Length: 123
Image 1: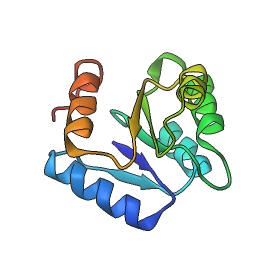
Image 2: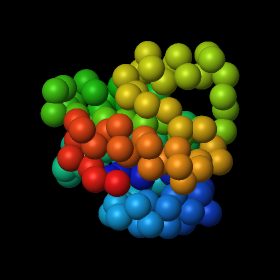
Image 3: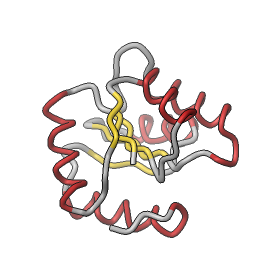
Image 4: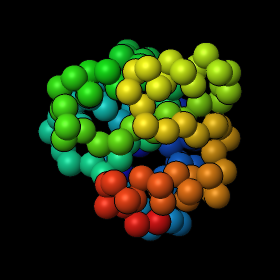
């Protein structure tokens, strides 16, 4: 799994939660790094923070979708914002799911289970 998060504390918490669920995570601190890692690595899924420096989540998602086509990993947005407009922007950019921050362990586990059927994750 690729975890895309610019905040160090949020990265630590998310990595700990993923580890408790038995999921190994690689880290990207911004959208540009996420795109590069997706193009040069193999990930079962991407958890992507919504507000990041250098390249935002929507631009990064669109670029990953454009360059990887059918071979793209599922991308799940993680955001403190919960507006219908923000959720729709994520869907329009090509994201496959949405987790509200603070991310609860139960919600993360359910998200991973739902992705598991399509991506080989086992959480």
